[in-house]
Length: 196
Image 1 (cartoon, one colour):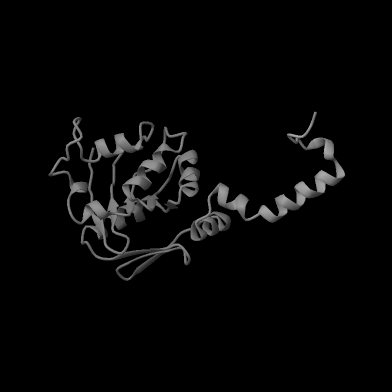
Image 2: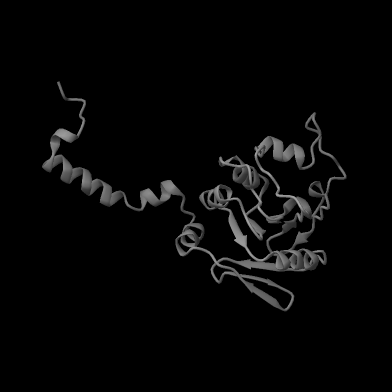
């Protein structure tokens, strides 16, 4: 398997291009990701592992192979990436569940065509600045700008730092009003500890 790790300055990203590898994340947990990402079985840091070296150990972007996140039906994979410091994953395709779990955990998954992912990886070897701008939906590197698509609601959630609980809390006044109204209109539907 051909692997290249590089540093992207603005967001301090990693490029992990895996040729012909769907990057199955079935076993992603924080401890296994860290173990596989530069620690031996006794938990000792592997000194020559690229992600244990400056500046790679501060990376925020992961460039990934196609179908990234396959095998991951729980949130462990995005949790592990987030715990490692990854804020953005760029790939030509993602497993659906992993893709949606990224948004719920504050990670921006960007889908762009595979040739552009490979071009980004080559450019990033220069250790020059690459800028990912969510608000403008752009990746800038050198004299190039790539636009990417993202669902407007998911974009809003990422920008505002909203997860499922945060979204519910935005509606708390409506929830309170509903509970008051139903308490008056249909009190039998409400459970109270005073009930005999």
